[in-house]
Length: 157
Length: 157
Length: 157
Length: 157
Image 1 (cartoon, each protein chain N blue to C red):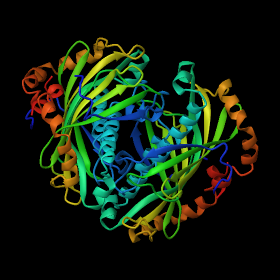
Image 2: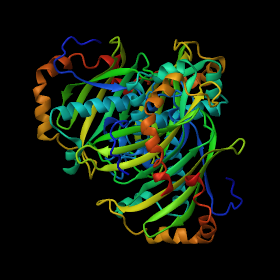
Image 3: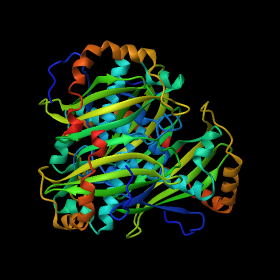
Image 4: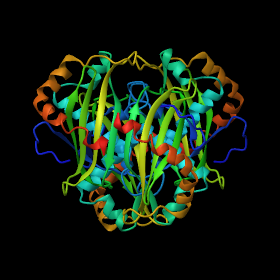
């Protein structure tokens, strides 16, 4: 599941706070979805696209499908790094592969495949990805082609 | 994806509050994981097994793997029903199929397959499912056998 | 801080789930604000007023001020009862006194005073409470008069 | 509400994500408590004290009392700065004054007074603040003396 090409992979550092943990002493499983969305959001922002601007133009993004494999739990005070890597896209959707990695030892804590769809904010209906997002994804297309071959790894296990 | 055998399927009613929604006007995608865990917890409780009692005996449960398909979003004030149906189990794990259904029209909003593992609270290591949980799962075994044949529906789509 | 008049006091039962707890083994302090909002929402709903209907008419409610005193923590699996009692209102705001009580022994875990303001959803500006809400509050006015005399108890301690 | 002495005031930058917002289009009111705890945690960490190390020594911290005044809501994509300023302490507690400020224009969005108590993790009983924390607070004592005179500003309004 490692990836030798660092090129298209965006990383976002996150600190684990008490709010993220539960009485089992580890990060609550649903919190990783928050972490992963933060990484996707920051990837988009790093390319100059803001989400609020999208809302103002009736564009919203929703998660349509995801699969997560939890390997090792994060705990309070951990520094983690969350990757967001676009691996495919269509007219109205984008697929991301994401990993949560522990900073101190590079251990992969959690991996996910996430499909995000573009919708009209008012109607909730699917709509074409906006041009700036398509360009962004096209920029990564070389990597995408390579990645497409392996993208179903997690979901098929 | 419908299921004609109501027998083993536990249902838990949940109301959508403002805390569950986001600026897109719909329920935040990670919240469904909370809803589904509530339903699993209530299924266990309905069988006389409490989670806190488990913690006191060094038994904890963690989500090991999940896949979710989001079809239609829930919105503020919606009444939803969340199912929790054990579909398979091993020495240290249980698989659930779960659905989030909108009460007013029976529409399936979201479906998931969730694998929950039993661990020792102190070490985090996998441990055998406690006897009361195994008995509970065995009670559902007839249904389990039937369900096992179709359980990979969602993850393979 | 107890209240001998049960009349105006709405109660809403809530179960504590693992999602509500943190690594300290107790309910995360911010979660009580969720619980208290659920109770206010259900009080309003019990009077026939829905929040989504409000949003559709450009009416939204925001918390403007609150003070909370945490006495005893709730823990996993606890059944709690959350009260919502309107104690005063003005042209654009309502004041609630709220308590979180543990079901098994009636112990008060947490108390709060919460001021909720009515705003226009689009502009965020204060707006007059809608007529149905004013009528609702007026119905409680006899109790309100009595309560007004003691409503600053918590904030002044 | 401004503060001319920057000396003791710790600031922590936070970005508003979709997870923080609600269907009213603004940050959900309870989320500010998360933000404020992150700032307190980072203040403690900046002084070399980690929370997990505390848990390992049976030391935990709980919010005992808080009052919040919400002035202007934060929205999606906002950059905010959250301050944490110790203003008083006793044998088992610390009082913080905190502000949430919008980065782009310095507007104060939200202010709070928060009392945090030190407890034994196992029993939940109050316990003396650990020595490293007391030293930390003593370092700020000159500021504390000055601040003590005005610390009840918010709660008394």
